[in-house]
Length: 300
Ligand code: COD
Image 1: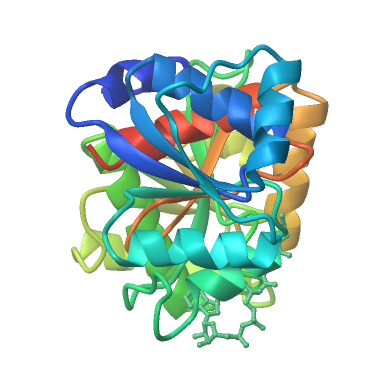
Image 2: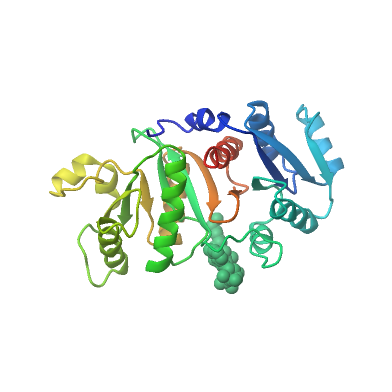
């Protein structure tokens, strides 16, 4: 099964038990709107940790009804984040979501060795996109967390992302390892890593997916481009997951898709003991809502 639209995430997320979502520094209008919508869908049970009077002001001003939702009053942002992370650490939450706090404040707490959310795996970011120009939802990793992953980190990033897609129903996702070109070029490290990752997949050192690379973006997502270049590949033109060479390429692609292609997006951090929804201020309310559905759906 593949997702045609990001709204399909709701069908996945509504099945199974409700996940408890802890919204850290919850005094943020778009995050509250997204969380309340997912709560009304029956997908999550939220706990709002933050400045209670500010949370209630925002809810009153926007006609959000939070009767029945737990609120933990913690006006200081850093303390609210720490309280939220500790709740998850103590198994009182299944999903952590960033509200008004800064990304570094959240990551610092998540990576705390005593009471953080480390699992021993690498943390990595995954983003799912819906664009008019492609027939299905596709994923991109890592556009926001790991800066310049080496082969070892790329393997960990792939394993995180493939497990997530498997959980969403992609039995054997098609993975393109991106480079600037589709031939191995000894001066382009991304193409060398791509060839190694493809071989590791063939030898079942990386499982539950089909990997091919190097592929350039055009032949990863377009059959016509692949045919024109004479590329024979099970992945080319039908990619489910694109592995980026580094954060710059990934982040520019992410933002190009959103700003120029008007992509709908859902994203989260994988590899911690629970999924972490870490959307940024520039992400739309809809993207925050889809990200909550993604975090809930990928853990069902
Ligand atoms: N997974 C698991 N543990 C990690 C990871 C990871 N991806 N990164 C760091 N750690 C652990 C290390 O093992 C160590 O114990 C501790 O965290 C600190 O490690 P450092 O000193 O290497 O890490 P930092 O604090 O210098 O950097 C970690 C960041 C995540 C902050 C860094 O990788 C970063 O800045 N990433 C880019 C974030 C960003 O700017 N995104 C913008 C796009 S929206």
